[in-house]
Amino acid sequence: MSLTAIDLFCGAGGLSAGLEMAGFKVLAGVDLFEAAGKTFEVTHPHARFIGKPIEDVTIDELVATTGVAPGELTVLAGGPPCQAYSVYNHQRGMHDSRATLFREYLRIVKGMQPEWIVMENVMGIYSIGGGEAVRAIKAELKVLGYEVEERVLKAEEYGVPQERRRVVFIGNRVNAPIRHPAPTHGENLQPFTTILDAIGDLPPLENGEDHGEVAYAKPARGEFQAFVRGSRSTVANHGSPKLGKINVERMAHIPPGGSWRDIPFDLLPAGMKRAKRSDHTKRYGRMTWDGLSCTVLTKCDVHWGAYIHPEQDRAISVREAARLQAFPDWFEFHGSRTDQYVQVGNAVPPLLGRAIGLTIRELITEAAISTPIAAE
Image (tube, rainbow, N blue to C red; front, top):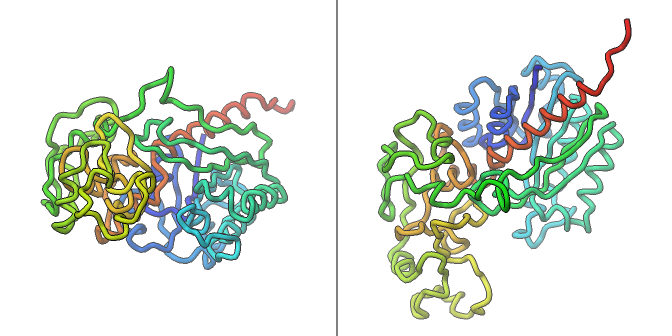
């Protein structure tokens, strides 16, 4: 069974990595972000990266690049940029030009005619225009011959050590059944992957310390560390961003599970001195070894979320953020450190992508078994 995929808005390639883990061959990725493109090229050597605005990508170019004619592609995947839909963007709305980029995805669906489609986006897509974006996606795909269902998936239920909610659309034009992946972790299932499971083997760092590629601090502990390490003996992207003296002083007062409320009043930022103690629950948050990470964003800024290491007075490294997104350690990020955090935060966790890919494989197999062979 030949399973092929193209990843639009691919970023560094988290969804692509997950689909490849599920047995798909990713033929191409499309994105405008140059640093992410470099990461994608290095980590997906068998795929072609097309670095340009999606509006400029033609069907003829995709066919020539991948060697797959319209109607032959198994999966067209993509997550249009989420800023217009995100609850963090208080000016979001259908007037935002980024909210119409899903129409470019639909244009390529129409041209490539994949058997299956996968779209991923943030929870805010439900509220934009009173649900207008969701209704438009499903209605326009219906016109193109696709039955589509969407569901909110929780990344931690698929082995990702992070509380992360994403809306995933799955559809097909081949009259196959549609379902979303069943959880593998949680109550009465495998235990959640904790922060200790995820990053407990990485070398300790001082604030601002970065020695490039380094050896692991400990032997691999547990299934997750064995998965992310593979056969590697060293790890890259593990450097600590340098925080100012005042932030180091603040962190010293924050226990595991604590937050800005534990910082002495005279050390608080001016704005937070006026804040209600019930507000901003994640700001200056310190992780706990036995818990899950908060959602990894494009900036692991201690001022905005719980991104302080469980024991060390520093912000988490790019590698630690990548581990919390379930990226294997062979997946090395390129560009500036700022660019690397953006690539990690924007990604679909590969383990979530793998669960989606495996489910689509199962559905394809079930459809093939249930389809009667025509009599000769």
